[in-house]
Amino acid sequence: MSDQKPKNDGQINIELDDQMAEGTYSNLAIINHSVSEFIVDFISVMPGRPKAKVKSRIILTPQHAKRLAKALAENVKRFEHAHGEIKDYEQPPIPMNFGPTGEA
Image 1: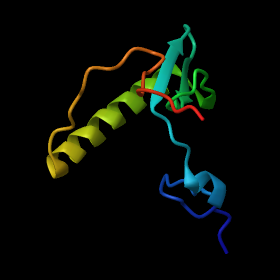
Image 2: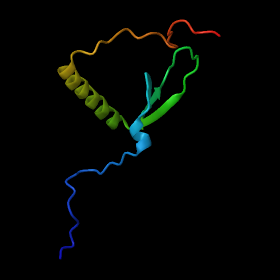
Image 3: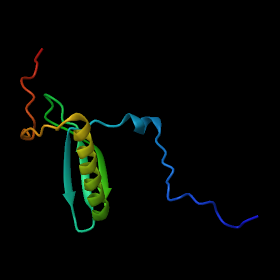
Image 4: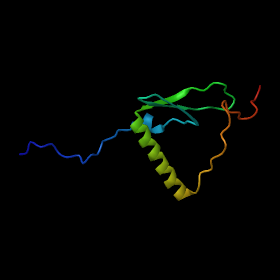
């Protein structure tokens, strides 16, 4: 019998519950930073709504923010290789104007 613990080869067991698996839609991200952290607020701006709420806030160390930026860049590159270039349209001003709003 061995006293050694089994090796996990650096793998992490990640759990994703049903609610989290549904995800949260965001069409706007605002990024702020300090010396010690990056704060990314994900927001959903909807047509005809003058107010939008932060749907999720992620706080990262500068090192993790840099790793995330690299990972996103690599995944965008792979996506474009498989599906063609992603068009980068000029961003509308905030608040976004989605056109006329209906009245009853």
